[in-house]
Length: 423
Image 1 (cartoon, rainbow, N blue to C red):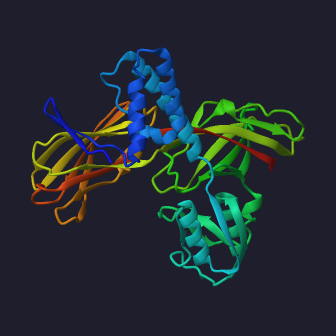
Image 2 (spheres, rainbow, N blue to C red):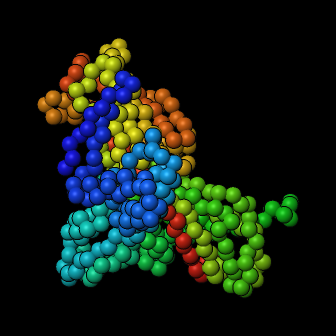
Image 3 (cartoon, one colour):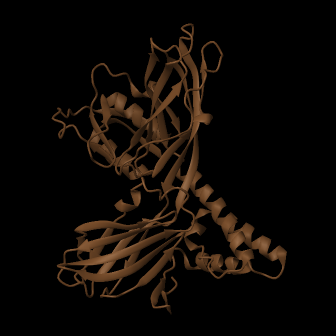
């Protein structure tokens, strides 16, 4: 591994820490980045193409372009954009389950699924006051996509997902007796499961134009993803009746699902004009939503804290600045500014995901202390500032540990539901 490089610039201690990647790979990336500024155009083109061929693991190693030539900035921006798109597409691919046996316990199955997919699953029946039976499961999964395998498992075990447990992951409870099997209700789109949960027709008897058809769609994701936002542009959604005609669109615009930390699904309401009574079903309801995801989580460590310390670390597309360490009455305050190169709309004021990034204080005894308070100090298009309060008598020799996505990713997820009965 490369050693940490320390430089002093305008009173700031700049720590440049390479990613935990193979040393030869990192050296090759650095060489190709330098070649982006070669005199010969053919060598610059060759370096750009080689960086792209190395794949998305290059992202964490791409440098800041401050002070670089216009040529390098342009080419690195192209490389970063294409690799972020590639990584986003990779992230929304489904994980797979391989598991077979005639006498499997639910506990064994849950453990295997968690290990193979990274998706947390919790048997919530005891907390819900339900009887947890010892039903034996018979499964035969060979690289089956997660949601397909999970639906079949829940159907066989007579279980359902409880959405309001407050626990991260998927919480399982006994299924209500009148609930239909899951495997026949939803469709799968990569790491997502899409299901129409209810359809409501509205007719205003005082206003003939006040007619609408509302379809609520549940979008669930593998818990490993932890989306920042899911948005559905109204113009990309079409509904076709069983008579072959496209239903007139209702109010358009962009819908954004409300997502809280720990959520594993969100509701997406879609509205259309009320079709004629001769239409008995929606033959096809399809669209494509955009999902914003955190990329690989990186750890930033600022050691030997002391009053007045300023430091900065960069990994991937994010720079974490330790702006101030000071005593604030009986507690110590650590001010941090987090800046992304191109966050898109990830840091808009109504999105609070960054406030849930892990922030800890490490002691000389290698223990960790959670912060006692948090205040947002700034929020802009590409940055957010936070002040963390720690209830310790002295912060000297402590380490501030902060975790954040090294890059923010976007991916498009096309989907289609079929044969939805109308009320």
